[in-house]
Image (cartoon, rainbow, N blue to C red; front, top):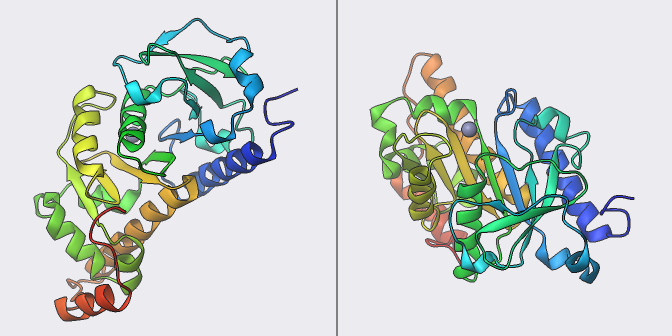
Length: 271
Ligand SMILES: [Zn+2]
């Protein structure tokens, strides 16, 4: 019997993770094992989990994250593919528990699938979310084609310029990604430097763009993190489509964008 069998709340969360993995594959954002997902599922944990024997010895996270002590996460497995995860999430990811020293984790279900190599950056952001009292639970790293393409231009490595350009493509981008997108200069994948640079940006922006690599988003749940990424990438697609037709898109004017911000009372910082 799997851990989902008597837990409808957790089953629904994992079904959403599977759906998002499917969307990512269909969009061409998740080649091979590209991309990672973590979701904090502690609020759905059953009391029986505390005494559930671990499937592994404690594994070092690589840093100490005090707010994660005793927390449970679903994490995509290392070397696992999004296109497989969408069909079998518990064979391509696992449930982990952070140990009492807040520096290690054990896998508790369903199989000893080792989490993503990007786990430190995902858990550092998860630690920050708990520390800051945020209700956000999900982190998503993926490779949205058009946003990554734009990150190859020096012009769009300026966060404010990229944000204004994307917001100006259609009003909904501004409405649904009101904090915009922050750019992190290139860093080695999986490095602590990349995790720290992401952490500094995620406080201010809906989505962080890693230069020449991909995006990192946080959300109330995994659908929310996906939507933020999707909305911004749609704007990037419109921008590039116009450029491919041979012109630079005019974009909405500052006045038109300010009107959207005021009429819809859009937040200027994370609530
Ligand atoms: Zn990546």
